Image (cartoon, rainbow, N blue to C red; front, top):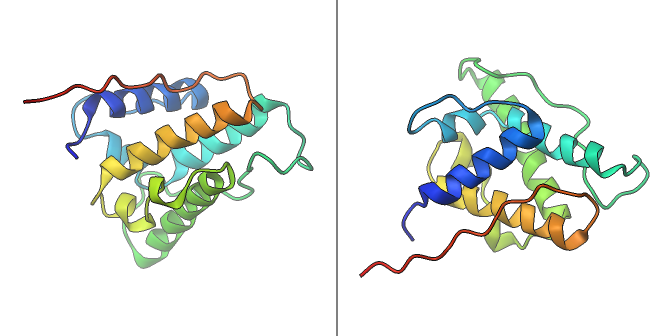
Length: 149
């Protein structure tokens, strides 16, 4: 499948709205913005907070420790912290009921290899949250399928 910039834009807007974090302007910024996992962890915690669920309610994930590695280099130490953040997000997505095939591998984001799958997972996470009906949204609006000939 071709990469959908429309789907990326919808994900970016959703994340910005819920976290207050802003993606740098310009093309090719979405992947690097999410690459260290910090913004995605903040997204998970923002959703938990907005849901009104208490810590004891286990249906929505909360990420207890977010490693602050924004803008840090790729030393082995920082790389492992980034991987921890991304893995925490992937687990939160999984716990919301998103199927494995809709999720992504940690390296896909860390190495910027398969951002289409990252966009798919973020969209699936939004859809799963809507199905759970535990928080009021907003959610990601569906992308219209465009047939190309």
